[in-house]
Amino acid sequence: MPFAVIESLDHEGRGISHVDGKAVFIEGALPGEKVEYAVLRERPRYAQAETVRVLKASSQRVVPRCAHFGSCGGCSMQHLDPVAQGAAKQRILEDAFWHIGRLAPQIIYPAIHGSSWGYRYRARLSVRVVPSKGGVLIGFHQKRSSYIADMRACPVLPPRISALVPELHRLIASLSIADRVPQIEIAVSDTGTAFVFRHLLPFSAEDEARLAAFADAHGIQAWAQPGGPDSAAPLHPKDGPGLAYFLPEFDVRLDFRPTDFTQVNVDINRLLIRRAMQLLDPQPGERIADLFCGLGNFSLPIARRGATVIGVEGSEALVARAAENARANRLAANSEFHVANLFDSTEDSLTALGRLDKMLIDPPREGAIAVVKAISPQQRPARIVYVSCNPATLARDAAVLVHEKGYVLRGAGIANMFPQTSHVESIALFEAG
Image (cartoon, rainbow, N blue to C red; front, side, top):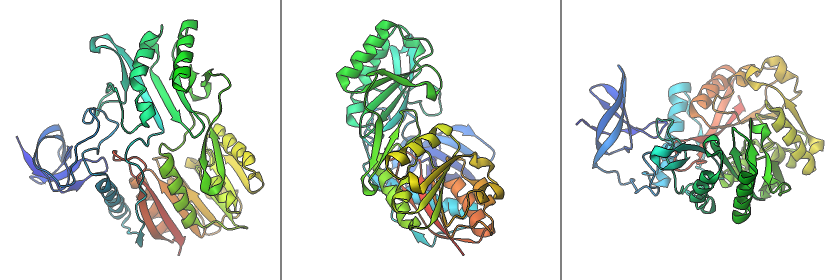
């Protein structure tokens, strides 16, 4: 069986080695280790593999906490010390800047860290009924597979929620349409917890009674979702408290529906907002764009600092939620929100927003290439804070900002939003040169 010495980690948390001139990406291997591996997929220029045996272990290797680690696709780095995970992600970010954008930040910001366990306040669990495997399966997908890693606990979920996973197995098994409930979405907030049960056939009266009893027994809200996300509605209690999270530093409450996009890690989100406001430095009298604004996660802190915020988002539902949140927080006077497809941004569409002194961009994984290309000499914010969930698209967009638009990459750093995974959340500051 072949062996390799691991040089570094890639963006998916796999060990990288070079064997006979070919790059080999090895799951479960850490930098500095010598491992035996088995090839999973061979390509002319690279190979994908998995660790079979560790011949020389890294001092940063730890025992994974979860019994499902290795089969479940939810986590990929439980075998690496949490502090080392942050350092690895910082290197991934810096490598992306250099190899994709030929850039290096002037300052590397200290990594934003929080709890390594129990942080995941949002989760989407898949459900299948497979009699040959014991009945109801609930969990995340297995690695490299559409099959489900049947979970009985999950240490990245809050302990109270993790403890309910066995109860969910029993609940689903008791339903008349158990094989037509493909998904359970979990949303934990500062004001309550919702379990949204996606169902492809109507629940019977007995099913609804069982769901209500589960909700009462465990202090959660049961929601039913017969169609798309907007079809979700409270099943029991019908009049439960709305979900919301608080940003105490900015005296802001953000209300949301359980199927809305919100950040998974509430504590890191608060620290990331603090960092963003430090870098953006909103001032009264300034006009600041918040692009891909969602339900106002960054918009309302900007407005609370006295600046006028112009939020833009592609989802009508989220824009309506952002406007409602602004009104509820008495920030409507210095905030406005617009629906627009930012992936189709042009110079004219940005100019239509009016004078922009500064800009915050928080796009999905696809990045914001149309936005950065649309920045013109006439509409050129003095400062741009870019929050990213994908180092590759951040580096690509940064290259446009620096090499084509004349900005300087002042600094960048990671926020460990998803400990135990290879997901890299980051923040970067650009200033007009």
